[in-house]
Image (tube, rainbow, N blue to C red):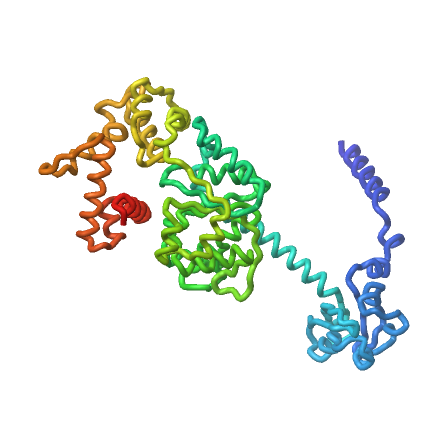
Length: 486
C-alpha cells in the first residue's frame, strides 16, 4: 500500500510538472514587468532612471532613450511632468503617493517606494504609475455597484413588512374594466399619473397594476403613505442623508425613497398631506431628477416614474393656498378617477371571494359565504370601500364558528353597522325623513360640526375625537360645505 501511495504521488508530480511551465526556464522577471499594465520604473538613490517598462514609457508619452539614464529632476525641468514622486520618496525616506500631471494635461497617479539595504542605506526607488482617469472610473464603478447593492438592500428592508398579496385589480364592473384598459395604456408611457378616489377605493392596487404593466416592471415599486411619515422626518425619508447629518442619524447614512426607487416606480399615496416646504423640493426633483441627501454637498441623478394618489380635491387646496399650483399641474398630467365600491356593486362579490380565498389560505380554513351574507354585502354601501370589505371578510372568517359565514349575532359590524349608527346619534326631538343612507349622512354631518365647534376648528383634535384621520375629516368637511353650498 505504501508503494502504491508513493507511485501515485510520483505520478501526480509528473503530471503537475507537465501541466505547468518551468518558472526558471520559461518565465523571467523581465517578462513579468514588461507585460505589466501598470507603469513600473526604477531609479537609483540619486533619482537616475535605471529601468522602465513599456507601460511606463507609454504613460509618460516618451521614448526609452529619453527616460532610461535620465535623472527624474531633469525630466521635471524639461517639462515631461510637473513633479516627481520619486524625489519625494527619496527626501522623505518613505513611501509617497501623488498625482503627476504630464505636459499633455493627462494626470497620472504614482506611488514611489524606497528600498533600503541591511544597513539602512537607500539603494533604489521603485515607482508604480497608472492613469488617474482609469482609477477614478474604477472607483466610481465600485461606488455605483455598492450604491446599487445598498439601494436594493434598503428596498428589500422597506418592503419586507408590506402585504403584497392580492394586489391585482378586480374588474367585473364596466367602469373598472375601462380603468384597467386605460391604465394598461398609460403604463407604456413614462409620465406622471394622479389617482383620485375615496380612501380605501384601491388606488394602491391600480398603482401596482401600472407598474407591473410598464417597462419598469422588473425594477422596484416603492409605495409611500405621506400621511404616515412624521413631519420632522419627511425630508430625510424622501431624500436620504449622509453620516452625521443630524443627531441620531445612522453612521452609514441612508438613501431616500427616490434613490431606493431609482429606475422603478415611486407611489406617493395621500400626497395632499405633504407640507408646502417639501412640495417645492419634490417639484425640483421631478423636474431635474437630482436628489441631494441631507448633509451632502453633491447631488445624485435618479430616474423615477411617479404615481401620486389622494382622496382630496387638490384643485380646491390650490385655491386655498394649501397645495402648490406648479406641483399640482406637474402631477396632474394623467388623472384617473376611481369610483367608490358602492358605485360598482358588480365587483363586491368578486372581491369578497378573493378576500375569502386569501384568508382561508392564511388560516388553513375552508369557509364559504352563505347566500344571505353575499346579499348583505351587495346591499351595504361600504363607506370604507374595498379596505372595509377586506376587514369585514377577515373578521367573519376569524369569529365564525361555522364553515358557512353568516351575518348573525356574532357579527356586530359591516351590514349591521349601518342600522346602528343612526340610533346612537339621533336627536330625539327632531323628525328625520328620507332613506336610512341619507339620514345617517345627515346625522354624521351634524356630529362633525358639533365636534369641530367644541374643538374650536382644530382639525387634528377633532379628527382624534372622531377616531378618523385628519385627511378623511378634511374630505368630509369639503363634502359638507359642497352640500350646503358654501
